[in-house]
Length: 253
Image 1 (cartoon, one colour):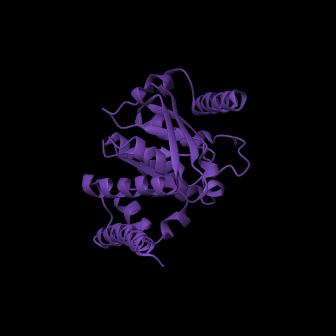
Image 2 (cartoon, rainbow, N blue to C red):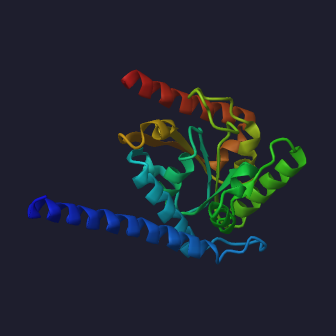
Image 3 (cartoon, one colour):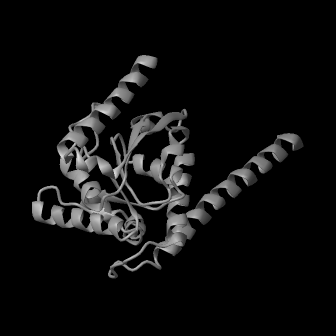
């Protein structure tokens, strides 16, 4: 082995070692911060520091996941007030992307109970006021909806929800549940309509190629809409809006 080749190998090994140490440091940092969050305490307000740490983790996952992000409609978002964010659901990366893009505000998502068992992540979810919803227990589900309404009415945090109820495994949009829109109706807040596309391809593309991910803010529905329409009508309109955007993307390929 020549001295030149030996030097190249040493330099390469040092670079790889530093990269590994950097990633290890980040995970230790997130773990250490998460341990300061009590799983027994019920938090009443969000915290900017913990939200920054959580969003930093989301952004890290997006970089590691090799996402190439395309965002439209950002200027429509009413950052001066709290709102209900509604979106189609393609993958677990959906809310990662949404929180990273909308980092100027804090969003607490309504999620299935299983997600609150994720190691480390469940602590940040608890501190971020995320809410679990039991789909098979109407009484508990209503309690979650009422709490979400309270968060917005008392100017505590914006709420994110996927009205389909679960991820679409085949990419086809499932029927939106009108009950999701009760939050905006009762809280008298804007509804930010978001369309997500491409996140379903991240797992199958990684680590060989980047994934184009599209986040389109389609519209912001004013609270005055509830004077004329009910949740069934608004849910149908929002679903059609997102479906149209999905079809446009398919036709453009």
